[in-house]
Length: 569
Image (tube, rainbow, N blue to C red):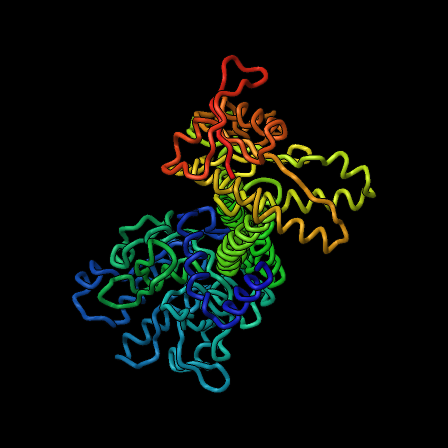
């Protein structure tokens, strides 16, 4: 089951069936970590948002006049911004005056990256009229295309798109003057955004306030300033793992990606062998637990395994590693279900096997009673019941066994005891145990039987008649011509039926006056020359005493008074 669970989980993962589940677990890790402003660095970042207040202030529909953008760029340069990341695409011509004002403002900013989207075969864009002017004024363009997962959530960003360096990478390189190591990205050239937080996690100021000089220069000095549309009406928003998937504006998303690049793209997905190892361990765990305990223990082990797996994933996440969770969880779930099912089937088989083996030593009724209490403690003690006790003994066994080899002697004894035991089972009695060359049985316990006296008398008659005849026939077939004789004593009354012995070893029996009387009557059968002697208590419980002959009162050894006795034919 462990192997099957692991294979199924890996196959589901390979087919993409667990992709959404895995993504949701990554989102949960970000949500649990929450906002962490320490992840802004080593260069501080700020966002200047074109918000609803800005749209009201300029009094124009977006895209508004480029002279407003030029004014903001002048303010940022004057404030001493370390670099400017302008997340607004300037590809179309407007008025000559406005276009020239923007170009002059862009050229005056020492380190600036503009947003681009459409590129040609060489990765060039039409921003500010094309690559020639871009090179002339020393501006760099970064691709602002986004990477959306199948569920529409933005979790990753690209180092290069359409032969143009990604916007976050271009900004980080322009701000630091160092090339970003592309090896930090995966084989597809993508990396996870190591989110600082959700809405307003990064200091954000209104575009109109910056334009009007209402933002202190100290709040912008030395920072990478990302400028872009934050007003929901401008629809530059995407769902992210933060804030429960609430939309986050484009500039804030870019700021989080820039912070990720500045920190060396620290959040890495673990190599596939680690995920495979976790999946295998998760599948094996329930199987090992099932080998040592019952289903409840397996479920507890599965719960503990889930906690350990989630704990490993969380600690790894705090160490900037994303380990897979979906495949191991599925393997753990399948392994648990399989282990519980297999364990239940195995347990049922073991109970059947135990019953078959146990029934060779005691009655089936006793076996069922003990197995019914296997989930609880089997205790010493018994219950008071009205029952009939039967003692049966082989007569003349000593002389018989003296004339036979030990091997043949034990075979003869087993033939006799097997035939008599079958009689007890056939009439619904409980074979308490063998006593040398005899046996003791109880009728009416552990299962109550209103007709226990009838059953016991019928059993005794079959023992002395057909069963003994069958036994003789089997012995003659084995070459033993001896005639066997038996004695049976029956007595009824209240007895204590249950377990006796010690806590480590016990046996089922019945104790009471009826047991003593039946044992004494079995011993008197040879004195009276009768195979079956029945005490008065048993006769009183018979609806029909036909075939019983009264012998009158009989004194029993070790018992005060006499007992009325009948002989059965």
